[in-house]
Image 1 (cartoon, each protein chain N blue to C red):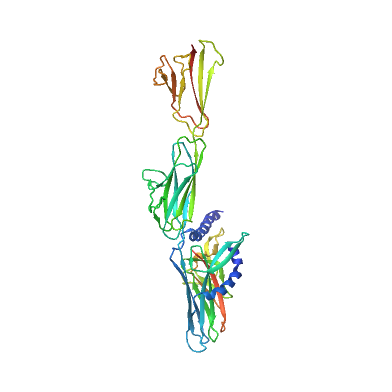
Image 2 (image 1 turned 30 degrees about the vertical axis):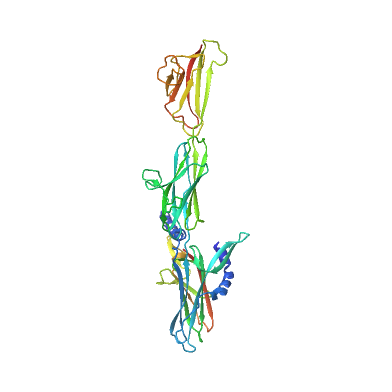
Length: 179
Length: 304
């Protein structure tokens, strides 16, 4: 089932862009009010993912705006980081905690060309995403590593390696499942 | 080789634990209703002058609504004897994400009487500690009261097998738990009762057979065979002395039986076989086992 969800990725990514404007106004934060000052804006939107079965038994993924959700619901978060200033910004780093009460779906994390790191300990330490954790030893005594389960992630970060010019936007996203 | 044997279980255990850990959240009760899932991102960056700056995003919130969840486990099966009360143990669990009342109902496919007990004594068996399950909200359906999220309650379902039930009868009593919060959320467990009743075949034979002159001694033999799937207990055979014949004193036989005689046409019985004997009654000491257990009794008469 998951593979089907992923295979529909591009379709609802499009939907996200369209629906983004439905969500709360962006918090435009200014460091300085002077003309030409570097200013970024980051906007979060969330959509609920619905998986239904069509007449031929094919699973179809649809998205819709979120109001109330029930445990098991998949929420797709999309973050747009835009340079609203008049000059390039550097070393942009987007950070987002995995919301309490939800479990990250690691396969859903999208990078938009950015470098991703993750924390499993509330932001204390960070590792390359996906994170691998020790899971005992094999027959030869070598430590076996497995991908960290989705519910072990607490934070995600995306790093932009290089400048972000005025007006440019980076879009990253991830999905979680409501526990 | 020895190292291999020591380390494999460790690896297996570690992997198993890792697996259980991830499964746990999938099966445990969900996020409590009313919880608000919120998300706010931050962006750190530097401007052209090297000043470190940070901006916060808008906050998106999502509220978790109540969802009902009911589990009634497990399915059970048992044999039952006609006239028995058969008890089945179930655990009723609220798997929803908020407190809920789970109403219970039961339907017997044979239409037998069913009632619920709170399994307050030793879990899984009917004992003196158990009490009839009440109806806490007075809606006409028994329930275990309000169960908080993830709480469970142990019950016993009592199925009454009618006395005259035929051997091999199968009853399925379906126990259903229904969420009061969302009556569309139900779960059922099925209890299958197969009746193991005795089925007695009685064959009476006489020797010599055919037409006989007066003064002939006839030997009657009664063979009882239990062809059912349940033991036959307290088997009593009653046979009248045929008209125009006279019981041969001392001739009644039957291994493992207590033999009594009636001298008044079956009104009363005693241990004396003094004439006149009108009826003979054999009471079997042991049960006739299921699947072919048998017993034979016999007596003689003389044709008048």
